[in-house]
Image (cartoon, rainbow, N blue to C red; front, top):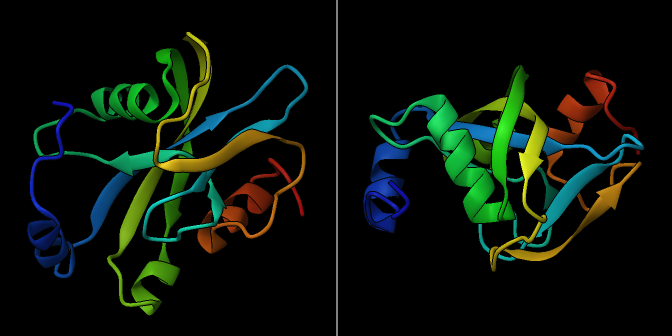
Length: 148
């Protein structure tokens, strides 16, 4: 299930009425730095963020993690741990949808990190870069991953 299951119009209609479940991925290196990508597509174009994506209907959470990691980062996930969730009030306040993201730290993977065309830039960071997604930065700070 790699192809997006519905059109932009269907997506907007559905998620204007119900929350959208997503998975967000944290990849750390041996020095504790986190891999971020900078969005090249809406929403939040130009902002650094955790790679992630929508969980599709009838897709398991682990399948969504694997699909998003492969599609956005080019890696195959071997082991993860769930580290909580992120709510996205900034999306709702800006007239978008209302995601709730399950955050997974990828503990083991194979392959070389190679972001797809949805990323304008990428890199390893030991501090939160700017501009950064407003709701994700609060999660990273609260859970003592990184600071500004």
